[in-house]
Length: 523
Image 1 (tube, one colour):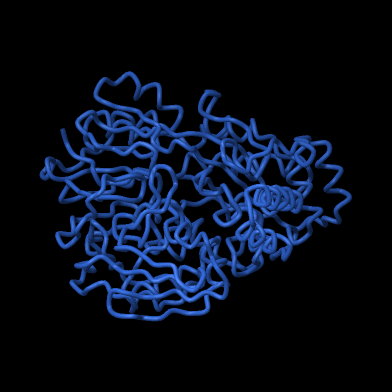
Image 2: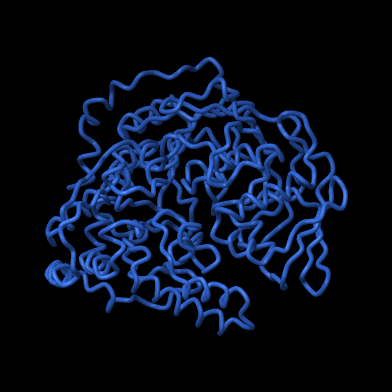
């Protein structure tokens, strides 16, 4: 019911989509991303679309292979010294930024320091970092207060990646967006052709030297075959489907579930699940402002959530592509240990009574919600309906996704442009342990949007990180997951998989990864 509101007028436009230019057809990949690209800084925001943009433009010191193991990327190699308290990393020879300047050790140390201000894993690394030493232009050391055995895992993580930037840009405070896009990755961002809401353009960087290993997830040889890639922003799903079927675009990252049967009937289109771990949908509450600074109010909201309703609204009735998960550790991940059904009774009546007993006094609950993101928009609409039923004063404030990701940075009260709730999705594996997951961590205003503060949660994350064995790790993760769900750091709404869709004329799309452009070519 709710997802249909995102398709108003879509059927009428299905066969009236404007033709896109065909002049550079053979050398240009035309890609429809999941959402509009409004923020260009992948350190400042966790928006998936900005992270995908980041992989075009930037590179990382290490990357995760298909088995989630860290592999050298920009790094030539490393040494571990002083009983694990010092890591010496040496860069590959010949690395260049898009402005022609060489990649230096100081660029890397400054980039790591900025990333540590924002990322969940980075916060743990930053806390254990004593400082950096520049050995020479290609070599630097990370000095630690204690051994940090997962340092390479931190630098290699795929979601919320530690991208390398020139020192002059990496000096920007992590709480401010960079104003210039210069990386050393396989594609250059064409700022002069960027038009938010219309398109983003990338051109192959001839100075990029790929590694020799085969590509694997976000590691290995990033060999590019298209001189030019255009991101076409098409917020209407039916128009995007029509453009794909006509061959006006080559690849649609995230087709709407309702349109998948139509795409399946087109013999020129391939549909494929490339994000094999799937995604998790969540509700995030603002812990800084009333009413959700009150844990009892948060708990009432959690009790009202019926995940099946959220999944059907956002993903449709095909239960082969979604499943419920009443845990903050996703199904299929190492720390999943069963459903936490006692904390999520899924009862409007129970939630209504809990809200009455919580002290809630009618404060306005502002839900910021996108109208142009079919996987997310219906989630906010369901929440608005559910919270109204349990007696909350709800204001569903709908806009485009770009506005949502800008506004969720506000820590002001709702009367001054703040917010109470937003919804999003993320990689299930990317939220699979205490170092990676923003959903269970409690560093307060240094943390993720919502700014949950809980010292016990932070202590458990460190306990997991430095645990002596796997059993101790699992115990710490289990305790942390239950604590975060009990205190309602985040409300899980279910898991799903996505079938991306592309023209049969493309080959080389990597399975088991994000929609990366390397290895992709026209048959």
